[in-house]
Image (cartoon, rainbow, N blue to C red; front, top):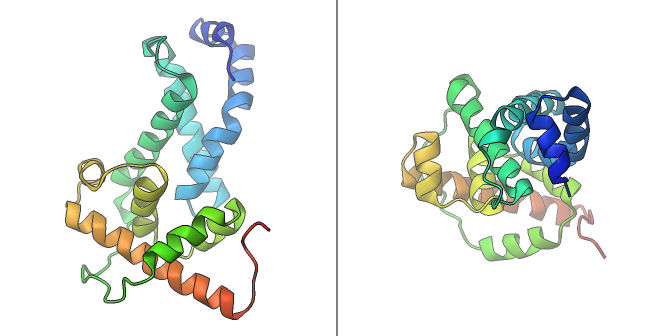
Length: 186
């Protein structure tokens, strides 16, 4: 939990307070960024961009808004802004709906019990755009309408990306099950 005094010191621009805030927020910020970025270096770069936005906007935060959710929202928006600016990161995918959408509830149930690191490894098998939309929808709780507005895509395309990600995850989980790999906490 970040103290109000630390936030006040950061608003005044005190470097030691900013460093302490960075250390306190690092796990939260990095966990968000590594869900969206394929490699740790890109995730760290995105995290640093987001932290600068946090510092620049601390004075605008309303005291009644919980701090960690406010930071989480800034980090997610930073990731989304990065996707908009760096369109070359998006992969071109056909917009045909996957035919096999059975078992998605089984995948969701399995994912709830999966260890975070194992899930992150599986999620990185999904193409970047589908992975990002899946993260926004399934993990961060955005609606398809919100995702469409943020990323400049249609709601149908957002739904397709979630279905596409689930299909890839289902196949990966099935393959791991065939190989008898245990990813679920006992």
